[in-house]
Image (cartoon, rainbow, N blue to C red):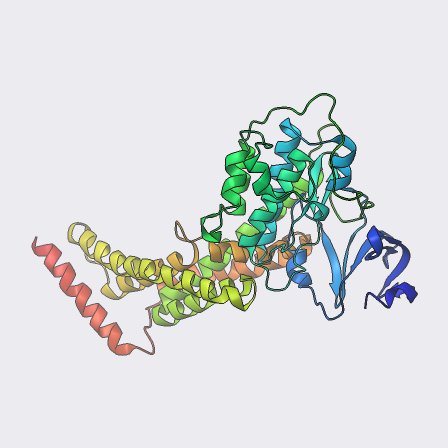
Length: 432
């Protein structure tokens, strides 16, 4: 497709205006008249536009549309990191801390949406008033999020040293990096991917960095090749006075994330309520749902075993809680009155479902739900509809869980066994 577009006036509803960014980016006008940037991709590449649009961060491009062979984003002129460093020299102090923190936060948003960058290098970072904006994520098939961590290290190392093409490991060895940054870069370059910090851990550590300021007269950065021309990519424009992302965009994102968390919580309430009413069916459906969410977020088939493994690890956790809750209720009944044995078992199953979704230490499924709801949460009418539907379902699930007799179908024999076991347990506690 990229070979044909030079002769096209339109790509879908977008009218091409000019070629930018080394030939693979066009400035274009959208159907509503606003300027957009269209990045052309190799023939046959089909970007996951839905997930790319779910990446909402002031430090990552805002994808608007796309299709086979192209991705559409807002047109925002920005300078690639190599050009910014070539002009101003290596970064230091708060400027370098903002760069390290912003890059890490961009990766957090990308990974949360179930994507990986796959090719994070200085050229894939734009600088707007000192704040980084990561571009070109999600375009490498089967990319592993763990492999983005060394990319963060290499990009931050370049920002700190201005030495393009010099491996970050070499910069560590020759002492080019500030002392405060060295341990974090070394951890990100660990040869074992499992031993590297996550993007969230990088962001947390980068926020605490205290780095020496760059020299007042910074020398021109040494680059192995001329800096590429600016590439337009979507990004909220940070205020010039602080170099930080636009407050309105950050506020909009925070509101959307709040609604997404509420919608995800309502889904968990529905799942737990259904499990209390139908313990066997509810547990099976919850297990299948959380496994499906993790599989959907995995970076291709290579990530499926890990996704299934993380789900299976939570099963013993859920099973222990499922067994413990009826036992605790039976013990409490010895001093506070008799409790229905069947309901005790049902509440145990509901607690087990809650563990699968959102217990302490189990954050994956809830985060996947929040990422899926982010696109909905940015449109007021969609928010209202989603909250209304899920709110009604959650209310019905709670009312049903508290008032209906649990059904252990299709395992009716199990129902009788559990009920008798809890009855005997209550009797034993009563005799104590």
